[in-house]
Image 1 (cartoon, rainbow, N blue to C red):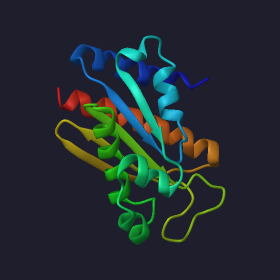
Image 2 (image 1 turned 120 degrees about the horizontal axis):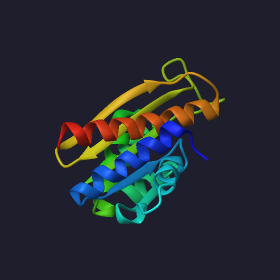
Image 3 (image 1 turned 90 degrees about the horizontal axis):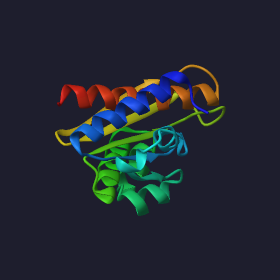
Length: 164
């Protein structure tokens, strides 16, 4: 279902979490649950993944993850403050030590000169704070979503190794 690389990252993530006795959660907009899907593709993932949040609509981000509507109204759903709040809200809601959140414009429509198609904000809530980054991925909708899943998992694994 997922690429070999994504499956390998999800498996490595699971090994790291099991070794620490910790859990991860997801808060997804543009990927619509694909990150959680990659995680749960790994047998035994219930030991380190309890739940994920698909908050495609702005109201869902506010209601499920406590993202302030002022962030969304002022900066748009695809912005650093929104994705950081999504990550924190997911971590808090799931009582997870680690969280990853994504919000982006997968296309083919919806882009603007300031936020072209492929723009994705990612955030990782860790026991040591929140890390964010903006990416602009190339390709069509499927490629943008796949690249987002890959980056979300690869950076999460990197952060866990850095913060060991």
